[in-house]
Image (cartoon, rainbow, N blue to C red):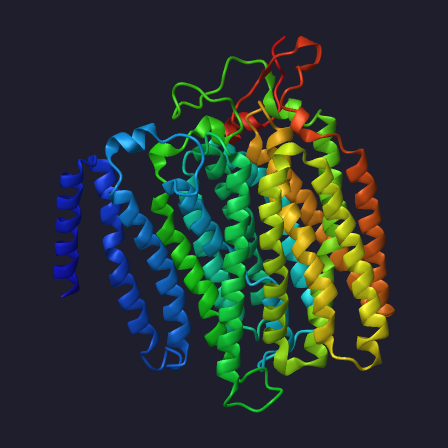
Length: 546
């Protein structure tokens, strides 16, 4: 029956495309979605098969998540079928109704639900098989952050030089799904958990770099607005996935004793959400058409008459050599390190303290923290979209000041409330409420800063990768120092140390020049550089021609 229905669907798509005057490439793209119902039906069928499948309580939330994603795709595809070929050709400028714009929004939302993030620490702390110590959690997080920091520049250069950017999103989503499946269901082995940090690091590094490069490549104008829209999608996806995970964790825990972390079946229930997000991200990729990607622009080069031609210009000074001599880029690296040093460990400390005090509410607490933070990030992303084109520096200053105030308020809440017997739930208000402001601003600004400081070099993803590497290095230092203070002194002292790092980040932000002016600056001493894409064959240093 599925085979017959699939054949009929292909015929209907071909007939509709012919009547609408669509090109063969467009008709083929539409026909790719005919397998979606088959995928959903097969997935739901497998999930209810005992003994490998979970209980029926699993299905409503998963069906709702899948249905929402498929509905959004279907609605926009119907709208796309109504556009004539002439309308598609004359469509210029940015609009959220643009197929690629909406596709990037959906992909960003689905990708946001892939990583376990703080859920991993909460689950490993309170799972019924083996409870990991804070030291072991710190080691796992440090390994992941080291891998991410090392991969960011290398994969950034690779993304600049490849035309297979959509395939990189697929590969990263598969890595995320594999790490989730192993990390949640096989908690008894520390070394296996350690090994899963490698595919997690690949997914955390490769997918965002590819999405940002695709954004630059398909956006002729309105890049700031598209980056803001992508970030809105990230926060919407995080809120929806966190709410679904919280609901599944509570549903799975009703029939189990209190304090058992929602029972032994709790893991298979809530981990379905990030697994479904991995699948939906892959299914949404055809909305970003390959023919619409300008690979030169995606690498940070100027537009040309041949979008698909991103061969290097005649030898001159290499683009990455110019990048690493720009003062604004070096200051942006330092700022990325200090900002995440002040920001990274705050949620981790709060979740670990709450998980130790309330083991039966570990995932619910983490979900609430994610929802509160990302609701605030929604507003911050909109602010960046409206104000960033007037200047980046004031928004960067606002983000750094907010992360400092956040650490001070969280420290006060911990010292004067939680450590005196108060509920850890109160700590969510200052910690995650302000996190929505500072992290929401930074998440969109870092992409814009990378584009500004790499303008004309052809190394946009390399610049972004280096900034994210510094960001990861800040996370490593933050987790290590804050974890040591929390263990040897108390959590309040750790938060106070993070506030000091926030003050240092604010000083650097005040020194940072306005990066919007970098793009229009003349090249030093009349020097010409070769704005080449940073492929592996051209990435390594060589003598520049005179």
